[in-house]
Image (cartoon, rainbow, N blue to C red; front, side, top):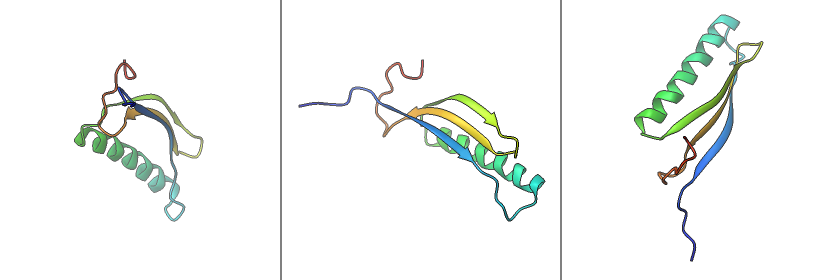
Length: 79
């Protein structure tokens, strides 16, 4: 029998501009969406580490994140 001792998930997320908004409003909306995403992780007590954040020329944001998976112990993944 096998059991998961520790686990994390690594993702690259792209927070894209909404085309129906003007450029300034769209970049503000992207920043707000990104901050809301981080607040949700904290409220749900999901451990995470952002390993990269890059603002694209169009104002969108790409992040690389390692986060806790299904409330399983993260071991030393986030050290």
